[in-house]
Length: 296
View (cartoon, rainbow, N blue to C red):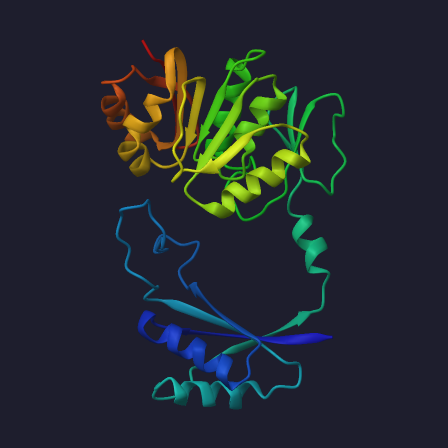
């Protein structure tokens, strides 16, 4: 079976109303994209927490999926009228063939080599190096598959710093990848916290899949204790706000690593954390840095 995919241009004010009208008229799905994506005029929609973004794209592209036998022109005319457009916009039609979407999605994620002894392997792949430390992790609801530069920076930092039996806290654990990696690298007590309950659920499931013991909890719950290693791979705004809380969990003589920080943000973060411990740039990948330091 093959479906029809129609697409057309509109503006930010009309994009959402016409999408709703398309669904009401019988479209199977409707989505909005940045018509300038991939060009210098591309507009980001999601910034860091606390930043302000104008919702929607002034140059929007609406894409709708229709039944194979749907009258695309009539359906779009009905939706345009319902959304208050003066006329139905010009549109293009493409054929969407039936596919095994699960298999197609899985094919986009291959094992990731972090180092000679550390790999991230989706569950549907064979481990390229069975003798390595293989973290079994699938793309899911929480951030952290190992593909993002900040995750790689933190994994490499953990590999350099985890010694047998050390305690590790992953502050903003997401998928739990950093805490799980620490446990697989030989850490003793391992914990993680996150503001998102779905991330905590995903982290617990990933820890079980990897056969490690880690205590993941909602960051709203009280977290006590100090750790030998604390790693926080979040973003610069929450790192600013959470500095006292994060540093409070680093034991004297313990190490802290921060990532999710752009090169131009590093100096400010170093200055903020200086009242608790000195940080310096430990590593750089693309435009992202990992800062690290020892609590006096």
